[in-house]
Image (cartoon, rainbow, N blue to C red):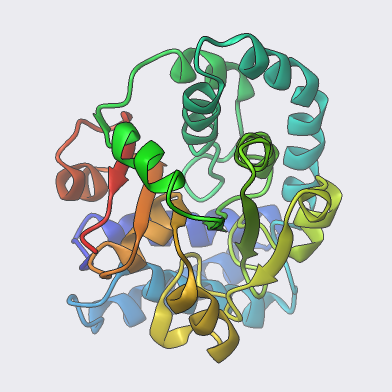
Length: 283
């Protein structure tokens, strides 16, 4: 996915929000915003926005001398989601189609993004999960699952990975092995190995990393080990907008699960902003 003009103010807003979370002063926040704006002015628009987002995040961490400005917020998101794990797990068990409901919950959880919202509100997850997908390749997904032994799951944000765990447990109940890829380093409120361990993803799946601090999967920037995992995967479930931005044109056995949280992604997927999507990739 290319970078749209609307991506630039979004990245600037997320960068300044990260500075404020790290308690940066006015001068530091202005310095970071100016550096990112200068970077964006000369950005190659053919590249996905997650790449300029990664550069913005590096500028933020370098300027503030803080390894993970979102650390406390990610911890709080994980704790809040874990507190509702039993309720969500019960909802899935009682659903007429547990796998479909787990997919909707996981997609609804994708709305919880500190890159877009200064505070996370968990109250809307159940309401969003009750709505149908605006676009759905669920039948094709079920057919694909029947023909494979394992799934590579590309995670997105902290907190919502609790909902990913529930979906992974549904996949495992169908006899599938699951490998989960998280980010290789702190970036926005994206999940890292620390978050995966906190919510118990390592109890239900093998946890690997992309080998990169980009807030999404960009294969040229990923580690050789991750690229090997990706190219050998029988089926890939890609969660979230960042992964969609980096992989939307990739020819692979991909299914994208996300909420269209901004006009560019809504345009790319052909839905209204705010709708949930479960879409087969081009491969």
